[in-house]
Image 1 (cartoon, helix red, strand yellow):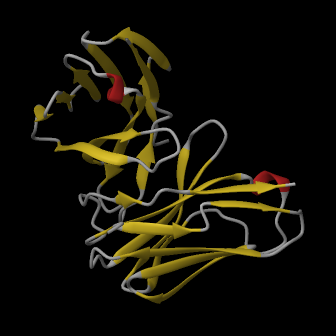
Image 2: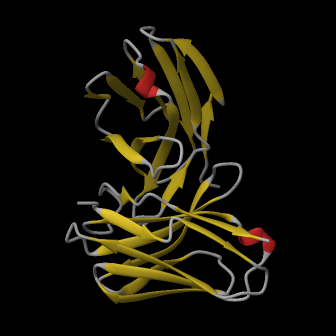
Length: 114
Length: 113
C-alpha cells in the first residue's frame, strides 16, 4: 500500500483554468504538507496542516487554497493557473509538527500550464 | 537568512567507488539535519536525521556526519551501486519551525557501470 498518494500524477492545463490536486496518507499521521519543486529542483514548503488546522502558510498567492477535510487528506486547489505555476507539487506527512519528525513524501504531481 | 548550500552540484562516479557529498547551512536556531534521496520522478525519501548532539549516523552504505560548530555535514556513500544514482538533498530544520524545513538544491549523483 502506498503510504502517501497523490492524484493526478500528471496535469496539463491551459492558463486561467482552475485545478485541484488530491493527497491522501494512510500512515495515521496528524500533519500534512504541500511543497513546490521548481525547474531548478528547489523544494519549498507552501502549506502545513496539523489536525486539520493550518499551521504554516508561506508566501503563496491567494490563488492557492489548501483544504483538509480530515487528517488523512490535504487537497490543493489552484485558481486562475499561470505559466509560473508549472512545477512538481509534493505532498508529505509526519507524526507531529515540532520539527524533528521524519516527513514522508508522495510521488509528486507534475503540473504543466500552457 | 536561513540557507542550505550543497556541493558539488553534480557528480559522476564509477560503480563500486566511494563518494562524499557536502552540505553547509546557516539555519538558526538549529534543530536537526536530514539527508534525503530523491530518485528521478519520485518524492524524496529520508536517509538519516541528526540532532546537534550527534556527530555521525549510518544507514547501510550511507554515513552522514555533522559538525554543529562549523555548520557542516557530509554524506558518504560506500561501494556505490547503480541504484544510488539520484539527487541527494540536505535539509535543515530550525527549532520552533513547526516542520518548516529548509532544503538545499541537492547533489545529482550518477553512478556509471
